[in-house]
Length: 533
Image (cartoon, rainbow, N blue to C red; front, side, top):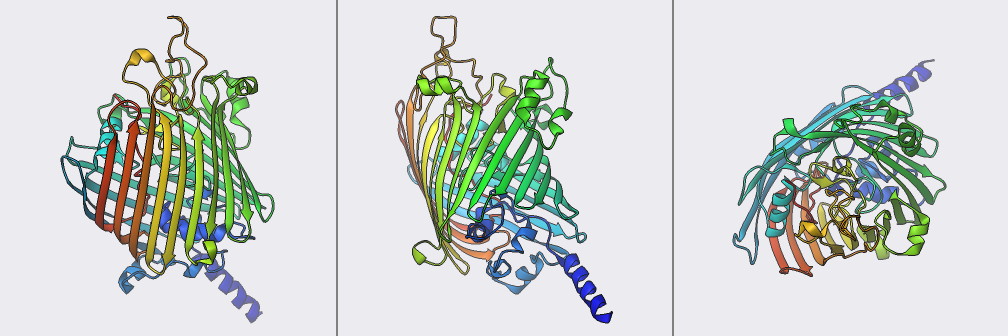
């Protein structure tokens, strides 16, 4: 009896100390865990990020995967096994971007993060950061056009520096053995790629409620979020137009090598005079597809449907794909006449860990192709965006991108490089020419007129009406000081060449060095494709 009681006591104690909550949604932080989940026979659902800490506990070696912090006190205060844990978030980066009017660039900011393991099933998290930042010209132009710094909030000030801030928080409750209920403000990511055509982390954080269900070989996520349309509000949050999104992502490990994913999303806004419904309870149904619901309601809402196939090759390599539909008519696809309603996106990629038997080396090759008019809608309040940015790929719609990534890690050292080549269409400044589907903030009805009255339905191809090519390379060398929040000393270099068919070419050489906090990813791959009012 004493032995049985001791076993029960140890089990309860282990449960009480089990690490709940989430790993930060940051490649700097979670990439080593991704490598473990991509291994043959691993049973995790790596396409659903941020990762649950309880999932990582089942991965061999995950508890010793991250290096120790550079000082013992920093290691102690950030340990997720402790009831209270947290740490500082500091950015102090200086650099130069050659060939620009203002040579000197900088990013100065600070904040912190804190988590509370309130019980064996409750975890609460909060983090906040604020920055003052002088950006290289290409990012400065994008910030002025969209009114936000990429993924990090509304940009205050007219230059040469912008002030902005971001905060995230969540409360997670583990309900029984199968459910996680999470209420928070932050970001989510669906997919195995460097990009996601379903839901990425490019846009600013948003309020959400998430239900994560895990049973057998399946993980099913219900995500309900409140998004902001900031156009015409002059930066006043009380004037931001609200819209809702409701999403499902189903991840099924069919076998030890094959994973299938199904994604669907609906976007609607609450101030349509024809449909004054606020949050539509019809879209709370956790199991049925939204498209039948949309047809049943006779609603004008924006619906997307996608699928993913991911296959483990060998022991440490993953081939992945995403296919997304906004609208689709097979006869018009076969006709090849560039019908505007052919709204599809395709992602293909391969990532290899410990590539060429080099420990800690990860290589990735990826292609992303999105047709014109993808993510748009006849009512622009219902386009697939939040806070002036796309919810999926940073280039929005009407582009083809080829991307190569390499990253090597050893102890606290990290060396990473990402090269991207993109071809995209660029609308002209003459509004009379209409929209060719490159600006997701224009309605699809704003197409060029073919007879002075009716909008042209065909002839919309990649690179129209004006082609633009972008070459960009991001090189980073970092020494991690606190790996749980991505705090590191970093030296980085950006090379970027923008070659438009109309207008002047833009060349960027941007070097910076300093202390950076990477609890959230930065988003340097940006270009001006629209200007928000």
